Length: 320
Image 1 (tube, rainbow, N blue to C red):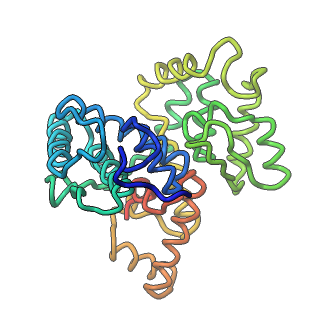
Image 2: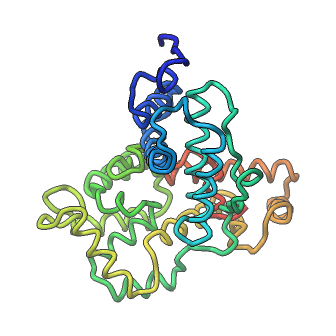
């Protein structure tokens, strides 16, 4: 890549528009398509803020004070309940990162907690969000068979909502019976494909059951509806039954952890940290180091099966 002239407008990021220049910074860093899309949106909000509040249209004019004032704005939104703690952190982090790439230093960086006084984000589950088997069965008995089939797929395969609507059940059954793994490609987050191992008859039965609701589009979306319309219908039907779609993914993650380790997850056991690892070591009759490795290996597999690349995300499903 050609060396940039950092003294030029927007630090030489090949666009006079401050928003697009920030997007180019992410491209230069080699960020994934998903990261570029998400952080570009967050950067756009910051650019709109400094344009309105400070009339700034060039990155070279941004001072640390401007970032501090933006952080204060985010903190106020957080305290008013208009932004979640996690979202406020993410918005500020995107600004910090793009300015760091653009400038080649960290002079403008504002730390969310120590500098801006944000609440610490805590993505560790303290209470299980998994839909219990009893609640799942009760809801399925009172909803339409079509929606019940979708819920069963989510629970059996750990699918996101969109993935469960866009799956091709006939093809999935062939993969399951042929290779023992189902390829999830449609509706994935960021277009990131993954494979789900077939480890129980419940998974086979869920896919077989879903085939009868497969339309001409080779998905579970009715032929007369588009995705958005069917999504609204699904959420409207589910809201009176006391469960959530995402609770089925949580159920998959916790069930899978027990299958891989031989013990319930920290959030299911009501244990955490060293106490959980100690009990895992005791139950499996291994050392603490071996128990730590067993826990980590299980989290790596579950993260991949859920379509995530970081084991930290499993803290939200399993506890820690």
